[in-house]
Amino acid sequence: MWSDFERGVMQRALEEAKRGYPSPNPHVGAAIVLDGKILSLGHHERAGEAHAEVDAIRSAGGPVEGATLFVTLEPCNHHGRTGPCTEAILDAGLARVVIGCLDPAPHVAGAVDRLRSAGVRVDVGLMQEECSALVADFAKHIRTGLPFVTLKAAVTLDGKIATRTGDSKWITGEEARSEAHRMRDQSDAVLVGLGTILSDDPRLTVRRVEGRDPIRVVLDADLRTPAGAAVLDPGRSSDAGTLVFHAADADSSQREHFKAEGVDLVPVSRDERGVDLLEVLQRLGDRGLVRLLVEGGAHVHGSFLDLGLADRAAIFIAPRIVGDAGALSFAAGSGAESIERAWRLVRTELQALGPDWLVSGDFERMQ
Image 1 (cartoon, rainbow, N blue to C red):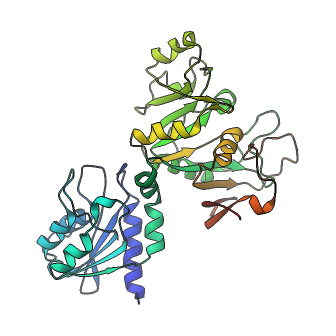
Image 2 (cartoon, helix red, strand yellow):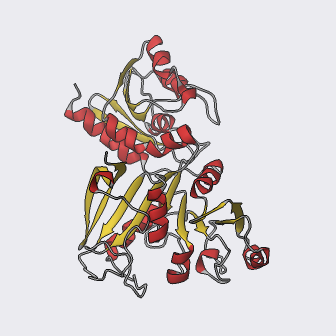
Image 3 (cartoon, rainbow, N blue to C red):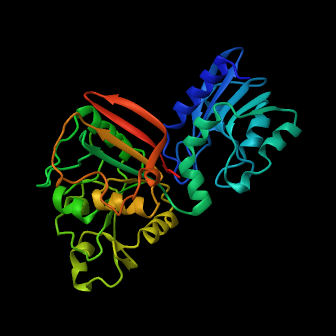
């Protein structure tokens, strides 16, 4: 049904979509084609700014009447912070619109019918799987109010994230570490547990690539994060804020140094793991945070898996072997009692990064 040229154009739109920081809106990319050539590309850069369709129309630098618009997500058909893209498409005189996937947000219903009723040819479903994956985080947030959760770690061939002494620097090489920083740049927030703070003292900022810092999130039930911890950013090296989720019954005397650093303390319910992870995700979702990168450690990863709260994994694998049963593994939760009940990754991708590999995919529990 779809030609190689059409697929190539939509691939360009998909790549263009990843350039923006539109949260809590979805990543969307667009391309305008006339006489077999791409006239322009567009993407949604930030919430409140031009959508991908309008950006592509403006970037064409001239009339686009009679051209075809390729767009990864169904155009909006409502008035929000910007006008409806359906009207911009009609005003521009575009003759055809090719849509990757329909918008999961209920308020956009009618966009396809609106365009067709005005005489525009509309085709839906080009590279639908890839376009749907691009907005999976947005779709989950719309459906549940929760952020899309990616568990990220660097492991050895035997699945260890650190030696029994806690040493973890550096499991992977330069290329893999740069890719990990790109993931931070693409996330709204990055989350770690207290154990990671005490053992690694991470900054959780973007440094190895150009980008912007995510909001830093710490799970610390009893407010034990030490004063001067890098994640509290006492040197103010980043504009990104820090959220510390703690148990509502934590010792109030522990709060002073957090307040002195301008940290946002968020009380939540306590449970056997420390803090209620579902409540943490609900609070993050309420703040409009759609893309959450969880960098562990092992017990945090295990808790997300035990509770079924993880959506995706991004695991960097280095050609090293620790060979120690006492060393920490990727996830240290209750785990599955059988292989049939284990989590597996579907829609997997494999990427070589120097001597290391990145394995990523969506979580699915085997039945």
